[in-house]
Image (cartoon, rainbow, N blue to C red; front, side, top):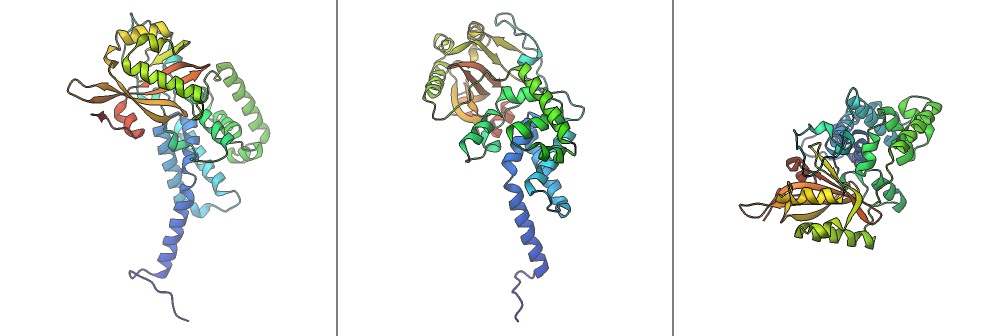
Amino acid sequence: MTSPVVTNDQPAGDLAASDQQAELGDLLDRHRVELTGYCYRMLGSGFEAEDAVQETMLRAWRFHDRYDGRASLRSWLYRIATNVCLDALEGRKRRARPMDLGPAQTADNFALGEPLPDAAWVQPVVDGQVLPPSGDPAEVAVARESIRLAFVAALQHLPPRQRAVLILREVLRWRASEVAELLETSVASVNSALQRARATLEAIDVTSADPMRVDDEGQQKLLARYVDAFERYDMDALVALLHEDATLSMPPYALWVHGPAEIATWMSGPGIGCAGSLLVPVEVNGSPAFGQYRRDPAGGHVAFALQVIEVADGAVTAINAFLDTEKMFPFAGLPLRRD
C-alpha cells in the first residue's frame, strides 16, 4: 500500500491537524453573526460586541479540546459568549441615551457641555454584523426589532444575568431548561428572572417605534420626504414629518431637544451648519439610518453624524445623531468625505 503524498515537506500528521483547525475555524465562523447580535444586546455597543465575539472565538479555539459534545457547539459558544459579556459588565454603569440622563433643553437656551465617554452611550450597530442575510421572515423580524436603539437601551436597565435570560428566552427562543444549563442554575430561577425582566421592560415601555420594513410603501415614502426636506433644509417640510413627541439627540453630548418646534428652532439656530447636508442611506439597528455629510467650505462634504431614525404612527419620532464620525463612519462602511 502506497503512502499518501505529502507536499511542502509537511508531515502528514501536521496536515491533518491543519485540516482540523481549518474545519474548526469554519464551524466557529458560522455562528459569528448571531453571536455578535447576542453580545450587542448584552453590551449595548457594536464595537464591544465585536471584541466580545473575538474573545469568544479565541477561547473556543484555545479550549476546543474540552468540548465534549454533550451540548451542541452553538450552545457551547453561547456559554462562552455569556461569560465574556458578564465579565465585561461586572462593576460597570449601564449605557444610556441622552433622554435617560436628564430633561430636554430648549433650543434657544442650551449648553452643549462636555462630551461624555463612549462607555456612557448605547452605541449603534450595522445590520450586517448582527442580522442573518436570510432566514424565516418572522425570526428575521424579531431579530430586527430586538436591535432597535430603544430596545437595546431598555435592556441596559436589567441586571446582566436577567438581561441574558430575557435575550435567550424572548429573542432567541431558548427553552428554560437550556438557559438554566447555560447559566448553571435552576429552571425556577430562570423563570423568576424572566418575570422580573419583563416587568422592568413593561415599566419602561419600549413599544413606541414601528419596525422598518423594506416593502412598506408608506414608510419608504416618509423616508424619501425626510431626506428631501433635510437636504433642502426646509424646516416647514421637516416639521410636518415629526411626531408631536419627537426628539433630537447628539451623543456624545447629553443635550437633547423635544418636540417639532424645538427641533426646528435648534436646526435653524445652533444647527444651521447642517444646511446643505447630504444624507446617504445605511442599514443600522434594524432602522432607517443615514450618514450625514455637512458641506465643507473647502469643497465637497465631510462626515458629520450617523443618523438613526425612529418611526411610529407614520411619523418620525426620533433623530439620533451620533457625532463620533471617526469611529462610526468606517464602522458603517461609509467614507469620511464625499466630493
